[in-house]
Image (cartoon, rainbow, N blue to C red; front, side, top):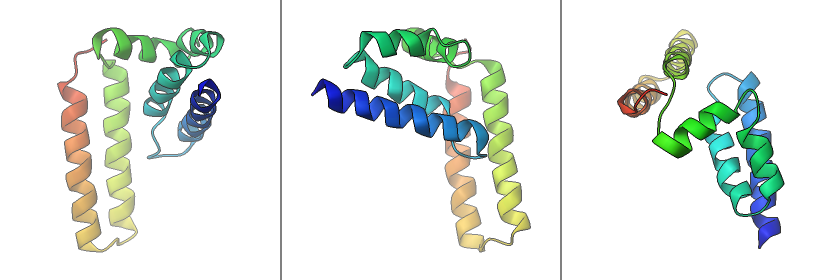
Length: 117
């Protein structure tokens, strides 16, 4: 079973890295999932991830205090607004745009309700 958790963790890291370069694809949630999976499969990979210079602090903040840094909140909100603006500029149908706005407003509300790291 450990190899299943390790494989899921590696897939999550890969998706997180893709999210680091693609707009609107999240990075940190995939890294959080990877940390969860690695905690159940590989102490070495878990330690590598939580001490990673780029992703480690966000993971530790979430694991210890369910906290998100102000900068991460601001960047996520900016990305969501950019996604909505791109959809609007591409003339996405109104029903889809309204759904996108509703979902992202809920995500932003959750995001800003978390304590700051």
